Length: 347
Ligand SMILES: Nc1nc2c(c(=O)[nH]1)N[C@H]1C(S)=C(S)[C@@H](COP(=O)(O)O)O[C@H]1N2
Ligand SMILES: [Mo]
Image: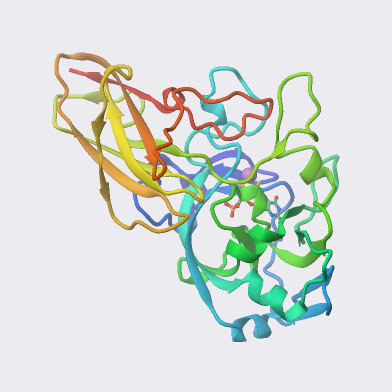
């Protein structure tokens, strides 16, 4: 299974989905990207042993068993999950972190329970403002701290799923068995795997994975005052042809995907002349909230030579993907049109 992936580091496991597996609306579990700060548990925890603690600014502390979760109303939601660092390796100026190209993203249908239903059982105090999630993966490296992240209460109550199922299968071990958080439309860092504790807080959680990373900041600045990564940015990727392909005339089927996190992709256009002219692509397949849309464009290349194919997404508010990404120290959220362009040779 792993040989199909582009493995960047083994320990912790960081691996991206190969481009040919990004050409369908559902990304198969076996090739779904893996991003880890700590060590993936070697064995799945026994469901009899596992329990989820809910505490903090709640009226009643809860210890929820897996059986109790299964008896709660089931929710299903499609969601495109992307690592904040996806696309980092395509930035013109190097940024530190794993060298993701376009495969740090995938789309799945997740099954579980709404976090709001669980918080409803616990009851919130008047001071409740943020919800922190803690995973039980073993920390690796010098930081040696548990992966804990918090999100604002509004997001937690509105559109956050606690998922125990991925594409109709029990949540795979790698992806957080038995339960993970999914702040729908938000970057992977807000989607804690191997959940064991949820703490309602009166302010954002403060700790290594909140304050030092997943922050947007410039050189010479501290991470902490920088913004926290939240929603996925409007972006399109080209999944066919591949960079450097030699094509013998047309028509060429250009394939891609476009996504906008909590937003809605309304249009994708393609340019093969450096952005001088744009032609609309057509969408294929499902159109669901929080999920990418697959698109295609039939291209009739003219004269032989080198062409750069670029794709541009527009959302339902008329906002366009930027021509170039905004550079930051940790290279998060690269959604530049140029950065994602593909140069091919036409014979
Ligand atoms: N417990 C835990 N949850 C975690 C992480 C982690 O290291 N530990 N990494 C986060 C990051 S940065 C991303 S992008 C997603 C990746 O999810 P995946 O490996 O299921 O694709 O998980 C998030 N949840
Ligand atoms: Mo991530």
